[in-house]
Length: 362
Figure 1 (cartoon, helix red, strand yellow):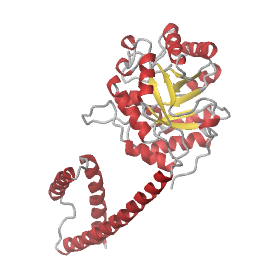
Figure 2 (tube, helix red, strand yellow):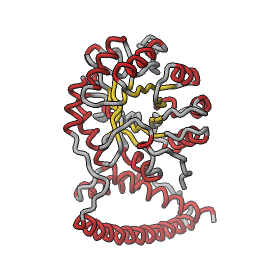
Figure 3 (cartoon, helix red, strand yellow):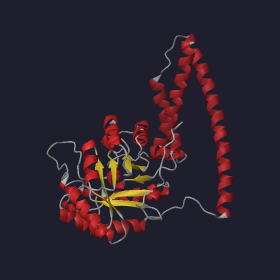
Figure 4 (spheres, helix red, strand yellow):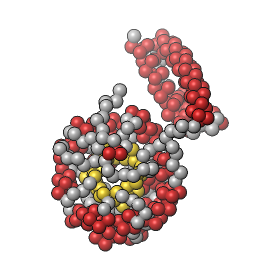
């Protein structure tokens, strides 16, 4: 069971205005004062109130543009002064936090690489103790929900109550259209455990290309997420980092106007009556699924006993590969995705192997 987080509602942060989505926008990197100010001006003109810009950039290889560093914080100060916008940047160390406090940064976020390192998270959490700065936590590089939650718990334990998350997808070795695998199921699980946690999607890093920003942003809204962090640059083609995933302010305005925002609830009697009936049907189907799974595990235990009596190994890889391929084929006929079928049946298989192991060891 998930531990409770002590949170200040996002409506009390003084950062965002309704309706959804809450939007954080700005360049991947602060490159020059002119670039920062021109981008901020364009975003401010159509109502973006929270400006983001990377000051320190964690890069895979040395020699790449690793951010302008502390001098860029003066440009964020100027954005606050001239346009009245809140400003945010990524931090990856205690030093970064102290510099942000010194220059009056309003909000910080932890990047995927940082979230994956509990030592860094703890260092940052302690540096933020006794401050009132909101903190957003991106998911770790790899799909590890416990690691993501652990970072939230460390920050919360040090008194960070203005706390939220950013879903930017996960690294993958598989060939997919996006830069990072969305794996929305993990975001849904986190949302289910912590329904009051402010939840942003980062379609820029998820997609890695302007071509996917609208569809990923719409998907986030369809799932009921609260906001978006989107990269915007006054001249994306000249950007020193992530040029392909940034939008000009006018293009971002067009994208946001294209999104259909779903309501979280309604007073409609027709909707409420209909949804109650459909959910009742789901409950019955779920009970039938549990009964079928229990019956299947009973057969698995009998198979385990049979193997034990005849001294046969439990794991039969070739047999399972054949079964799984057959199930994926049948699943397609029902309109079910291969990923879904593989996830469900692999989980069932793992539980069957565990049950048979218990028979073998008894």
